[in-house]
Image 1 (cartoon, protein in one colour):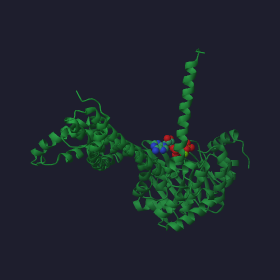
Image 2: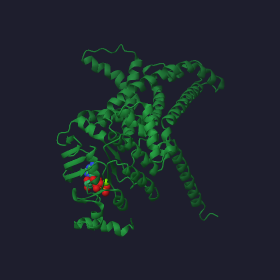
Image 3: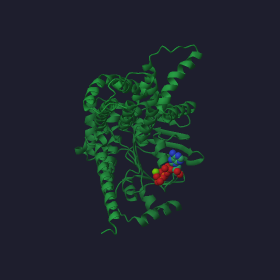
Image 4: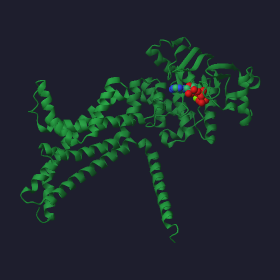
Length: 258
Length: 250
Ligand SMILES: Nc1ncnc2c1ncn2[C@@H]1O[C@H](COP(=O)(O)OP(=O)(O)OP(=O)(O)O)[C@@H](O)[C@H]1O
Ligand SMILES: [Mg+2]
C-alpha cells in the first residue's frame, strides 16, 4: 500500500509535526484545567455526602469513566447542539475546538473527582482531629493539613491523567481538529510514506509523555519530601521482596533438576 | 478547675457514657483506669468535643458549655482551652517536628512566626528533642513522635492536657522515655487527665485515680486508697488482673 520505507521521511515528518505540538498541548492544558474544576465540583457532594447531588456526581463519574471517549466526542458534538436547539440556544457556530476541550474536560473531571476523593480520604482522620484539637476550624484543618497532603498524594494520579489525555487528544482529529494525529494523516497523502509518518508521530508523543512524566516525578519528590524516607524504605523493601520471590522461583525451578 | 456534670454519650442505641461527673482541680493529675470498652476514650474525646456528648455540662473555671445546645464559638473556645495527646500521635505528616508544634501557635493563636519558632524550639528541647527540630514524623521513632505530640499540646498553654493511652502504641523499650516526659511536666503543675493501662505509672504520677466501667465512674480517690484498699469489688477485680500479670513495684 505505502511507499518503500525511507528513514529520511521519519526525520522530515518529525520536524513538520513539531508546530502541531502546540495545539495538542493547548487541548491538554485547557481540558485538564476544566477537568480540575469539574472534578472538584463533582467530588465535593461525595466528600460531604450531600444527598441528591452525591448520586448525580456518581453517575457523572461512572458515565465518563465507563464509556469510550470517542463516543463522548460524537455524542456531545452532534447531540448537544440538537438538545440545545430545543431550548432555542444555537451553538452550531461554536468552534470544534471548544467542543473537544469541553469533552476532554468532562472526561478528565470524572477521573479528577475520583482522585480527589481517594487523596482526601487517604489523609488519615487522626490528623484532622489533631488539627481540631489545637483549635483549628474545619476550613483551616482542610487548607493547612488535608489539602497539601492530598495534593502530594494526587500528583501521580494527575500525571497519569495528563499523559492519558495527551494520548486521547489523538482522537480530536475525528472531528476535524488539526492537531498532531490529524496532521500526521495528511502529511503522507502524496508521498504515501505512511509508516514513516506514524513512526514520527509515535516519537513526538513518546518524547512529550516522557517529558511530562519527568516533570511530575520532580513535583512529586518536592511535595512528598516529608515521606521520602519512608518511600525510599518501602521501595527497598519491595525490591527485596521481589528478589526473594525470584530466589524462590529459582528454587522452585531447580527442584529435582540438578 | 475542670468540672464535668452528667456527661452522656450514645452511639446509636449503645449508651457508652451514662452520666459522668468528675472534678479536676488545677494542677491535679488524674488517671482514668478501666477495662476495654468502658468509655475512657469516649470521655476524653467528649471533653474537647471531638465527640459530641448528648447531654451534660463541661466547665473550665467560669467558662462552661451546655452540651445540649453548644454554641459553635464555645466549642472552639473549649478546644483552645484543652489539648489532646493521641494514642497514634497524629502528627501532621507534612510538617517537621518544629512546624508541628508551631502550627497551633501561628494558625490559632496568631503569634508571629519568630515567636512561635522560639516557643516551639524551647518545648522540643524540654521533651528532649532539641536535635530533631527539622525532622519529619516519618524520620522519628514512635517515642520521639509522641514527645513531639506532647510538645504540640503544651504549646497552646492549655488549662488541661488530655492523654489517651499515650504509650500503648509504642514498643516496650520506648515507653519509658515518654512516661518520663509526662512525669516531668506533671511536676510543673500542668493539669492532666490520663487514660492509661500502665498501673505503676498511674500510681506514682497521679494525685487522683478514677475507675470506670460500663460508662460510669465506679470509684475514685487518691492512688493509695484505690490501689491498696478499693471499696468496690469490681475495682479490686480489675486491679488484681493487672497486678498479677504485670510485676511492678514502687
Ligand atoms: N465512633 C464510634 N462509633 C460507634 N461506637 C463507638 C465509637 N467509638 C467508640 N464506640 C464504642 O463505645 C464503647 C466505648 O469505647 P471507648 O473507646 O471509649 O472505650 P475505652 O474505654 O477507651 O476502651 P479501650 O481501653 O479499649 O481503649 C465501645 O463499645 C466502642 O465500641
Ligand atoms: Mg480507648
